[in-house]
Length: 213
Ligand SMILES: Cc1cc2nc3c(=O)[nH]c(=O)nc-3n(C[C@H](O)[C@H](O)[C@H](O)COP(=O)(O)O)c2cc1C
Image (cartoon, rainbow, N blue to C red; front, side, top):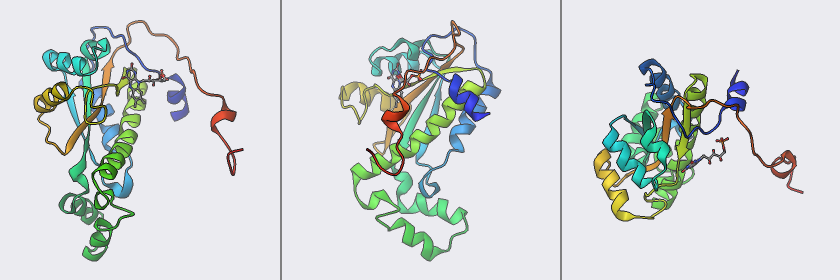
């Protein structure tokens, strides 16, 4: 049941040295690949990192957060801004069997294609789509008994904390300037498994019916 997975999932930041089985990792990645997105644009790419030196560089970019260095696997979650351009978006739409005129109207629509609005909107909407894929991967990891932590506090185009570190990471991962490393998903077997504690705002602070009162 999805609800059970939601209830038991938590951020796991300490891992054992046990390797993650390929079959489990593949399921986690597949959950991300199959996530929903706006007009099915799928503006994401995922780079699976197991190499320790690369993990060390990613750790540095994440302000030294040890779960990045110590994870068995780190998935680099990338927003691919070029997904919205005519060629790439058009290909996705054509795959759905849409005719050329409909594809054209979607690709050139301010409402359906944020890249017609500008760079900021493209980035914002790409990150929005990516979030669904990462959420799906966290749930799939939990279902597989693998602990994970989303790491969004890192040097990149969004935080602009250290241009040099962000650029190092980009070149190490082979990213172009239209591919933004938004966050990492660190994965591994939990060192000291404990049940999830949910620290959340009360229901009446976040859920409303009809209007905010
Ligand atoms: C977009 C995003 C970025 C996050 N970045 C970090 C991070 O850089 N480091 C970290 O330790 N946890 C990070 N987290 C995990 C949150 O701190 C965590 O989800 C939150 O405190 C709720 O705890 P839970 O995941 O155990 O339920 C991030 C979570 C999200 C959704």
